[in-house]
Amino acid sequence: MRRIIVLALLAVVIVVAATVADYPGRVDVTWQGWEIDTSVGVLAAALVAAAAVLWALFALLASVMRIPRRFRRNRRERRRRAGEVALTRGLIALAAGDAAAAQRYAGRAETLLDRAPLPLLVAAQAAQLSGDEALARRRYTDLLAEEEGEFLGLRGLIGQALKAGDAEEALRLARRARGLRPNAGWVFETLFALETRAGLWEAARETLDGGVRRHLLPEARAAHHRGIILYELSLAAEAVGDERHALSLAARAAALVPELAPLATRHARLLIVGGRPRPARRAIEKAWHAAPHPELARLWAELGGGAPALQLVTWFERLAAQNPDAGESHVAIAEAALAAQLWGEARRHLGVAITAAEPAPPSRRLCLLMARLEGSEHPQSSAARDWFDRALAAPADPAYVCPSCGGESRDWQPLCGHCRGFDTLAWRPHGDGSPAVATLAPPAPVAAAPLLAIPDGLAAAGQSDK
Image (cartoon, rainbow, N blue to C red; front, side, top):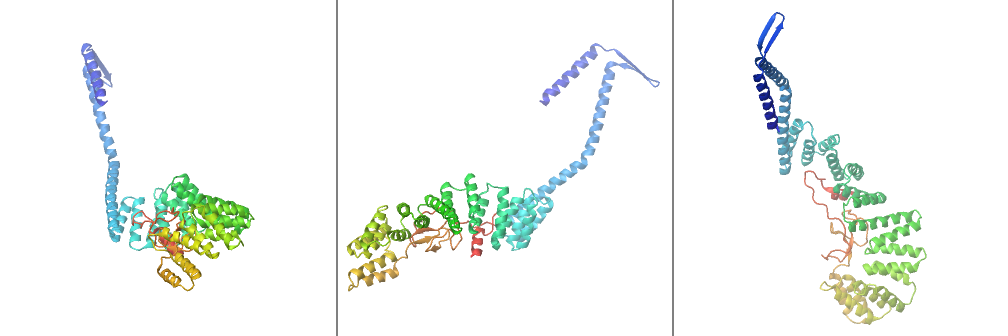
């Protein structure tokens, strides 16, 4: 484009010069006693020369006037480059674990970069690395005043609050962070975990719904979490005397998590309390089909009421028909047969249950049932004592296991009693490495790196809660 303009100007000059040459003419100028008599070409050349001199003078003057601005700009650029170098060296020192050097470079970068967010963050992380939590808190608090650094400051302060066990402060800061970055996955996970640990089930349900809308967790896991929250809301509704709402919530919870026996048991018990035994039986049968469990068998026995022992065997056969291949179905029939003194029937079903557990040895519960059978059918035989001896060394009975921390519990709870993880407990045999039934819990927290991470994460808060 510039070449075209230059060519056009040259063409204009050539045309003007040719015109003047073709019509030379004379110019006579008289001014204040001065008289100038010259040709048109000379006058035009003089005007061009004068214009060129004036342009040069104006350009020189403008250049002189721009010197201070250029100086300030060059100075800012040198400071920026030096600040970036100091910031880079500070990050390297953090990665190397050199807190003193990281603090020194962070201070230099903070001075050179006019308190930009990143130097403040490096200074805060360096203070944490050296164990100076008070200084780290001041630096993170300084970040809150920076528009671009507020979110970083919140993350650091949340980490400090969790490490100190101040769940209330961490919850307040996490809600503020959600207002800034609602799509941040760590904000959702932290806020949801804090709300569930605090028993804020309505708030947790709203947070979960927001996470689902923003695709922050898989739908299957969200449905599992929602079922547990509805279970807790059902307990709260029953506590205030709203049995109808409690039943509705329990039914929805059992439908969302059919493989978790305590949810189905609660639903069935509320139906029984409401005088609806038939729907209660259907609820237990549905849950048994999904995942047989001893708790369901106990409630089924209660529904059997005062029926004769022989009729209870048929009663349990009806339940076992919902999942005939499950080992728990055979155990349930065997226990009913033992109560009815049907030794052959009890032996057959216990044998199937023991075979189903292979190659693992029979559990303590199966060994004790076999000892009971042998002692009842053959009181004089040593077979009962042999089974009692095997029970001492047998694997423990199935329990609720947390895959995140490995903790075990005989009773199900929404929160793991060891790591305080929400919706992590799942039913599985003791010491079994196979996946737990209904394990949909999030992965265990990853150990936090020093930079841009919540120190010790929610695990630290869980330890301090206990």
